[in-house]
Image 1: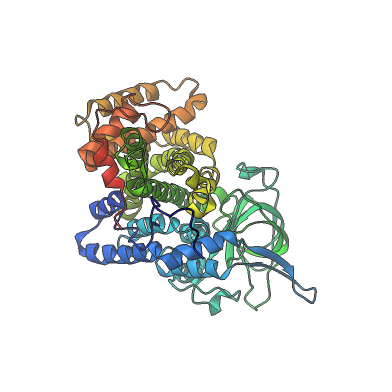
Image 2: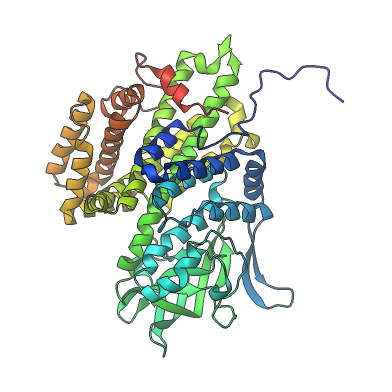
Amino acid sequence: MAGSTHSVNNQVPPLVGYDVFSADRALTAAVERHLDPGVRDEVLGELSALGRTSGSAQVQEWGAQANENPPRLRTHDRYGHRIDEVEFHPSWHRLLGKGVSAGLTAAWDRPAGHLRRAAAFLVWTQVEAGNSCPLSMTHAAVPALRADPDLAAEWEPRLTSMVYDRGLRPARLKAGALFGMGMTEKQGGSDVRANTTSARPLAEDGTYELTGHKWFCSAPMSDGFLVLAQAPGGLTCFLVPRVLADGTRNVFLLQRLKDKLGNRSNASAEVEFDGTWARRVGEEGRGVRTIIEMVAATRLDCVLGSAGLMRQAVAQAVHHCTYREAFGGKLADKPLMRNVLADLALESEAATTLALRLAAAYDDGGEHERALLRIAVPAAKYWVTKRCPPVAVEAAECLGGNGYVEESGLPRLVRESPLNSIWEGAGNVQALDVLRALQREPGALDAYLREVGQARGADHRLDGAIKNLLTELADLEGVEGRARRLAERLALVLQGSLLVRFAPPEVADAFCAARLGGDGGAAFGTLPHTLDLASVVERARPVT
């Protein structure tokens, strides 16, 4: 029976039933900018189809269900046999199946493969970020496995398959496979050279027996894992299959699942090895060098994931303020709220534009692009992932009290927002990696300067920022203590250069004023009032 004390009005319709890709002007522009005309229609059609799937009520409900029903660890079956399995809600499997079939593990040999996958990853993250972890790990395992042509030939077709085959069986019997990763241990964390897991060579060449543990094992339900262990020749990369060729389970003892702040739908585990069979990948003693390509790819996914989370947060905030009325008008038309929304939109567009530029560099593969990636990926990973939490929190505030309620979806974004900054090397690790690139690979800085230099003369604030950056780079005294500041400036200048070259004038003008020219405050909503903020907000509005 309907209540008679009030009527329901001034409520915002749900942001549902729309094309998540096509409604994102910054993303569509970035994709079209980097696409070869020969695959343009194919790629745009593919991304639009995924966008419609992502924006559908059914798929959004799957995301909520997967988050509300986290995985459960089953160490034994009813008879007492050790099985070490992770059970997921059916919605998790539906989402993961959609992600695999959308090509999120199939970038390496497709035309414009990394660009189209990057855009798809950014879109798909907005549904439920948890299932992005196994998709990212599987995608990123490919370049590491190519250190061993025989292993690559055996596993790569399954890892790049667009078929989700969830059963635990020998790889040769599967139409598709997923990979996880185990690097860190209790005593070492990011200092993987402190790992104590041992690898004892077996009679068959290239095979070993592992004994030890991993404090964080990503995607523990996967078919295989890349792990680091100490072989006689030093720290080495190994492939650990979940099921052996004869159909028996490898020794892969799941001790517990992590109880995480966010990312609740995804399993992260502590695992023990006790006579675990493994195959060496690459040479003994070169484990970090072997696995570093996997790490680089997952770091770019951290940038993409944060860009996706920011986009969804901004889309929800702008959508809400477009419909919600207060104090005699639409919230989006109020000068102060418009300032907040425009500031959030700038952060989102800058992140998206930078992430897609890096993905396009992977597709190009030229010397300049490889050198650019060496410095730009850790700088972007450092900065973009750190901007995600304040964007998510401010976007939730745009909804007022509604943004603090689970039904709005914003709390899930807030809990997820710090993740990409922490995983795959936290802030200090990225900043120090930027320093290594500067000190050991002069071609990386040259490639970076050529890239940002393409916008010189177009905006005086960008020109000033480039000049100041060069001054800072010329003085490397005590540089480690300034590594975060340096990584931040490198990322901001690169974002500014890209926006000046490719974004609408009102977006580039506002970004350069606030982020490079010092004409903005520490909080969102402090842009100069003289800017064309209405156009910035309208560009960020999702068209349903």
